[in-house]
Length: 81
Image 1 (cartoon, rainbow, N blue to C red):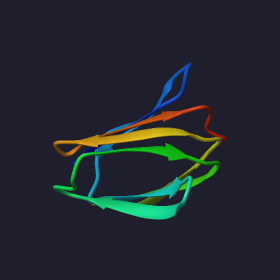
Image 2 (tube, rainbow, N blue to C red):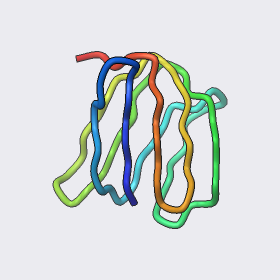
Image 3 (cartoon, helix red, strand yellow):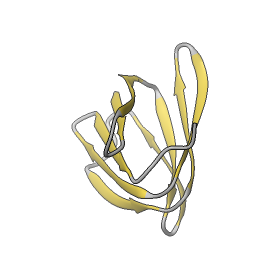
């Protein structure tokens, strides 16, 4: 599935991933290939992404995630460097 993590000033990540774990407002949840459509608020925390190249983590300050037809878009308020 394709994942994009975007902040108001830049695109932080774009690429193919096998799974992504998000800090939802009600707790952690994971999205895999062919996941049902979803829109969720995100709280400050860590997005963990797994791809063929390994695992990568991004610290976000909150935001929203949309999952639709194997495209996952994260609109983050900010991402810590």
